[in-house]
Each structure stands twice: as structure tokens, then as C-alpha cells.
Length: 323
Length: 273
Ligand SMILES: Cc1cc2nc3c(=O)[nH]c(=O)nc-3n(C[C@H](O)[C@H](O)[C@H](O)COP(=O)(O)OP(=O)(O)OC[C@H]3O[C@@H](n4cnc5c(N)ncnc54)[C@H](O)[C@@H]3O)c2cc1C
Ligand SMILES: Cc1cc2nc3c(=O)[nH]c(=O)nc-3n(C[C@H](O)[C@H](O)[C@H](O)COP(=O)(O)O)c2cc1C
Ligand code: FES
Image (cartoon, each protein chain N blue to C red):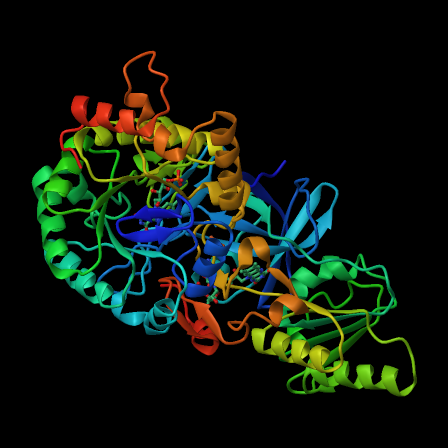
């Protein structure tokens, strides 16, 4: 068991938001397939269909998507909320809004349905006015985080975009505003794929966020930067598909590791598979997850696996705030 | 070659207009396919939607389109030379049994995914096809196997439901102590598939049905097509009785494009804007 923001998780793997939706049955299945914490698809203030297809295209080395934040709207999911309140697994509810006021309204409602955490998606590139602006501007990130924090009764996670010029500063602004953890990253880009026969962008929305293996180096760098900027835990997401990828993400500074696109490449059982690979790697290297968290921040040549000395070392040398 | 990654552009090579409602488009492409699988068809500038492969040869395949809404009506107007994007094939397809004691039950356009299956099953199968009227019967002369028809208005074959004929045949086999069906395959409106499933359950016969849900990615990531704890595009679209027994959303609930769960009747009457 892993303790995360006061809750017990069976392992450090997280289902990323927007993958497989938010109905209780499928989230239960993901949990049963070895996922420690499941995140719901971002829930918005009002019903929204999202964009026309094509919305999600696999490129082999990752995918591009512009789903466009489809959502029933928080007030139109009664049956799902009811089912989710009776769940027996930890739940992270992702939300979005087009303004601070909308974020607060959705957050207040969702908090009353008792998720274990609320994640604010201040990073989605797929609509003209939802969220993304908050994730690239320190003041806006601070404002929305502070406003949501005020109206909820569960720990708050801020989900950041790798498009921020200095993601560490955004993370710091969220921490200062009361965020309990950071989730990084959302999709990268936006990118575009053009069909050369028809001379048309393939996605109906033309541009879309990139995910999967092709963004892993960006995600690793972002988590590395955030780790140096904040003292709250980080959920590292972006391009993770194997146990070794997870180890790399822990070394960058993640406390938990999220996966989304990996479900395409290895199926829902990816959680069990990555767990096994992760544990095998840790055992073969005679170390623990705790010991490798942030390990890439050690001075060159440092080989100790003693978590206490590493933690001391990190907090004195690098981390702005000691926990 | 067709891939399950970004759309491969293919020109329409041939077109058959079966009647005012059904059109088949052919593509001269070799595609690795198992009956029951589907592809995502992209008409640039319009939309992208799932269609089952209804004809399959070594270097050619076809999809049969029922003109309903914006996309399908547009698709039915495509002519040879027009270009569409294709992703796939996706999904699991039917488990094909070798036994002659198989039944295939098609309702309306549900004939499309079942057609390549019928061509692979033992020709002694029991084959029923229901449609609104005689004019809605797909592929009237395609199969070597004998087909029984039902229509809502009695303009061809039995007037009534496909399940009437299936129930009668199950009973006949029972009464005459003949081998019972080893498998029943069904595709059509979900209420019809549910009626077939229920009939099979009562008689202890396994069945496989092919479900439809709103789809985006086609490869099990976006969650648009979730039905209970099953992902229709990757776990399905074909489901066996033992899975259907546990799928409480079967014939009851489907997700709209927004992700909102609604009663199936509301889902099927919903139209893309
Ligand atoms: C696995 C699968 C195989 C299919 N095979 C065939 C086939 O062989 N022949 C055929 O005529 N139809 C098939 N369909 C249904 C076909 O995809 C829809 O009828 C088509 O999308 C209608 O689009 P439209 O714009 O004309 O109508 P719309 O006005 O958009 O909708 C009509 C109905 O189609 C369904 N639909 C709409 N968009 C989608 C979508 N993106 N994904 C899934 N369903 C949607 C909804 O139930 C809706 O009520 C299949 C569907 C699935 C899921
Ligand atoms: C189809 C799809 C839909 C997504 N929807 C959301 C969403 O609603 N909210 C959100 O915060 N992130 C969303 N994301 C981003 C993922 O949660 C994740 O941050 C990103 O895909 C990177 O992780 P990965 O490489 O493991 O997929 C979506 C990603 C994909 C591929
Ligand atoms: S269509 Fe995306 S999960 Fe099935």
C-alpha cells in the first residue's frame, strides 16, 4: 500500500484522465486490472459533444487527439455519480471550466459527490477557451487553483501542460495557491498531421495534443523541472508504457506514474504488466520505489539507495521547500 | 495494405446501389480481415464513422451503408474515383464454428457484418433475415445457403419477427430430437439482438451478437463506446452470451457523443448535428 495525500493506494500506477471515460463499471475494471488510482475523464460545466471525427489517430509512436472535451456536464451524470459513490477503489475526478467561476461551480458540485481527489485540468489544448490559458500563465494558474481549493473538501491536484514556457513556475504557483499535488503532463503540442493525398489536416479540429511514447522525453523533463520547484508530490504522466519507463519517471521526481496511451499499445492489462515489470526492476536493482524517486537529481556518481540520506540530500540541495 | 494507424487514402473502385436505402462501396485493397471486424471511414471535410466490412476478397473489400444521417447520406453519394480515408480493421470479429448446426439471424443492415460470416459457415446453417419490407432486403441473390425472410408488412416471407422463425426452429429441433444449434449469430437492432439472446438463454444455446456504440478512436482509448465494463471497439463489437449476461447496459443504456448515458431508445433516435 502506498499512502498518497492521506489515501491508501494499492500501487503507484494511475489511469490518466480522458482514457476510457467515466462510467463506474469500466473504472472498476481498470482498478481490477492493477491500477492504483483511476482518474475520470474531465467533467465540464455543461453538456458538450466535443469535436467531429477524426478525433483520435494513432501514429504508432504515440497518438494525436482533439476530442474536444466532450462531457455530459457535471449535473447530468446522476446515475454514474450514484454508482461511483458506492465504489471500492480510489477515484480522482478531473474537471474543467472556461473561467474561474465555472471551475469553482463544477468543483463544488463534484466535491460533494466524494471523489478521493479532484484534479483541475488547466491544460487541455483541444478547445478554444477551456483550460489551456490557465496552464501557461502563473497568475491565472494561481487564481483558479486558489478558487477551487476554497470550495472543495478533498485534496486538489493541478494538471499542467508541457506547453508552459516554464512549467516549474506554474507548478510553484499552484502549490502556493494550495494545490496538494501536481499531475504532469497533459498532451504536448499541439501538433498536426496532414494527409498529403487530400491536402487536408486529418483531425477535424486540425490541431491536436500529442501523447504516448513520442512525448516521454518532454514529460520526463517537465517532471524533473517541477520536482525542483515544488515540495508537493507529482503524478508523472506522458509516454509511459513499461516498468522501465515508470522507473525513469520516478527518477525524474514522480511519486505516482500515470498512463493513458499505453492502454492502446498494451491493453487494459498494461497496469498489471507495468506493475510486474516495475517490481522486477526494483528487485533486480535491490532498491525501492521510494529510493528512486528523484534519484536523477543526485550529484553525478551518487549511487546510494538509502532513502533517508537521499531525501535529506535533496531537501537541502535542491528542493525549495522541505516537507 | 491498410493499417490501423493514420487513415490510408483509398479511391472508391466500384459502387452498387442496392435500393434507395443501401449502397455498397468497393475498394481495391488487400485488407487483413476477420468477419465481424470494422473499419473507420473518413470522408475528408465531413466526418469519420465505423463500418463493418461486408464483402471481402483477396484484393478487394466493400462496405454497405444505410443512408440515415449527414455522414451516411454523403457516403452513399460517393462515386468511383472519390477518395476516402480508412483505418482498421478494428475489433474482434465472430468466432466461427465448423458445425452445420449454426443459425444466423440478421435484422435490416445487420446483414452487412453477417454476410462474410455466412460465406464461411457450413452452408447447411439456419439463416433468417428480417427487414421492414421486401425493398429493404439486402443482397437478395448473394448466398448459396437457403435464407428465410421476415418482413414487418408481410411483403416477403413471414410477417413478423425473426425471432418467430428462430423460436420455431429451435422447438422443431427439440421436438424431433434433432441436434440443437451449437451457436446462434445475430446482428441488427439491439432490441432484436436482445430478443435473440433471451431466446437462446432460455434454451441453453450460446450466441454471439455484434453491438454498436458511438465511436471515436476505434482502438480502446477514448471510452466513447463503453458498454458496462466492456469496450465495444476492442473487446467487441462481437460479444458472446457469457459476456452479455453480465452487461447490464446491453439493450438498456448507451453513451451519447457527450458521454452522457441514456436509454437505448434515446440513443438510437439521436442524430449528429
Ligand atoms: C462497429 C460498428 C459497425 C457498423 N457497421 C455499419 C455498417 O456496416 N453499415 C451501416 O450502415 N452502419 C454501420 N454502423 C453504424 C454507422 O456507423 C452509423 O449508422 C453512422 O455513423 C451514421 O452516421 P450518420 O452521420 O449518417 O448518422 P447520424 O445522424 O450521425 O447518426 C445516426 C446513428 O448512428 C450512430 N452513430 C453516429 N455516429 C456514430 C459514430 N461515430 N460511431 C458509431 N455510431 C454512430 C448513432 O446511433 C446515431 O443515432 C456501424 C457502427 C458500429 C459501431
Ligand atoms: C483520447 C485522449 C483524451 C484525453 N482527455 C483528457 C482529459 O479529458 N483531461 C485531461 O486532463 N487529460 C486528457 N488527456 C491527456 C492524458 O490524460 C495524458 O495526460 C496524456 O495523454 C499523456 O499521457 P500518455 O502519454 O500516457 O497518454 C487525454 C488524452 C487522450 C489520448
Ligand atoms: S471508440 Fe474509443 S474506446 Fe472505443
